[in-house]
Image (cartoon, helix red, strand yellow):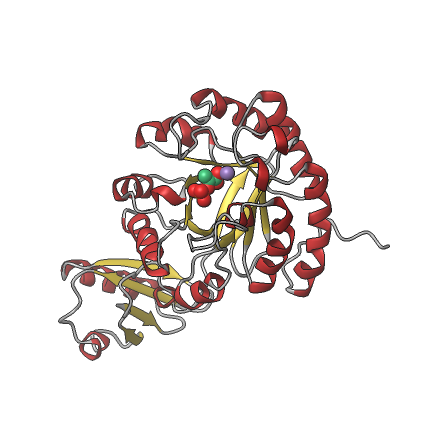
Amino acid sequence: MIVVMKVGAPEPEIDRLTNEFSAWGLTPEKIVGKHKVVIGLVGDTADMDALQIQEISPWIEQVLRVEQPFKRASREYRHGEPSEVVISTPSGPVAFGQHHPLVVVAGPCSVENEEMIIAVAQRVKAAGAKFLRGGAFKPRTSPYAFQGHGESALALLAAAREVTGLGIITELMDAADLESLAEVADVIQVGARNMQNFSLLKKVGAQEKPILLKRGMSATIEEWLMAAEYIMAAGNPNVILCERGIRTFDRQYTRNTLDLSAVPVLRSLTHLPIMIDPSHGTGWASLVPSMAMASIAAGADSLMIEVHPNPSKALSDGPQSLTPDRFDQLMQELSVVGKAMGRWSAELPTLAAV
Ligand code: PEP
Ligand code: MN
C-alpha cells in the first residue's frame, strides 16, 4: 500500500505515522518526491482498509493499494515519479533515470590485459561513455572457454578507473567475490544467468553499491521485476534494469531477440531506470547501431555497448563487439535520435556535418 501525504504535510506528522505503521507490524518507507511525500507500506496489508487508514491523519491525501506482486519496484510505489540512480564516479556524479540525459556504458566483454583495458577505456571515454564495462568473472556456456582473469582483472579495472575517471561496471557471479568486487565496481552487474539466483540477489541487496540487473534470457517482465524486488526488499533501492535480449526460436541471424517493447512496458510498471544492451541483445556488431538508435527512440535511459580493440581476436563476444572507431562514429550518429528525444547532454559528441 502507499500513503500519499498532502502537500506541506509537517515532518513530525509524517514521523508519527511512520511509527504508527511500524507498530502495526508493517515496514514503512518514506519517499520524498518533488511535490509530495509518499509512505510506502510493505507487509501484510491484505486485510487493511484504505479508508480507515486515511482517517488516522488529516494530512493523508490518499491511500492506494499496489496491485502488482512487485511493490517497491512498482511505479505506484513512488506515486508515478521515476527514480534516479546517482552514482559517484571519479569524474563526478552520473545519474541514470527518465529525467536525465542518456548514459552510455561501453567496454569489452572481458578484461583481457592491462594495455587493452586502458586503451579501450580511453577511447570510449573520449567518445562520450561515462562507464567502462568489462568482465573479470565471466559466465561462459562451456567450462573450457575463457572464464575471465578474476581478481587480477579487478585490479586492471581499478587502474582504468584511475587513468580515465570512468565509473566501472562489472559482473558478480559468486557472493564470495562481493567484497573485492565492490571495492572496484561503482555498479555491480548481476548477469542474465543469475537473475533468479535469489541468494545472490539478497546479498547484493544487503550492501550499498548500485546494481545493474540484467534480464534473464527467458525471464518474463514480471519475473524480472520480482528479481529487482528481492534486491530492494533487502535494502538496496538503487537498481537499474538492463534488457539484453531474450531467447526465441531464431538463432541463425540473431543470438537473442532484443525486446525493445520492454522499454514502454517497464515504463508503465516501474520507476526504475532502464538500460538496453544491443550487443548481447543481437549478438552481431552489424546490428548494434540500429538497435542502439531504436533503444533511444523507445525511451531507454542508458545503453551498454561492447567495444574491443580487435574484435576478431577477442577472448569472448568478439562477433558482437564494435571497434573503437565504429563506437566513436556510433556515438555521433546517436546524437540525432538522442537530441530528438531530449536525452543528449550538451557534453556528448554530435554528428559532424557532411
Ligand atoms: C556480459 O555483460 O558480458 C554478459 C555476460 O551479459 P549477460 O548476462 O546479459 O549475458
Ligand atoms: Mn559479453
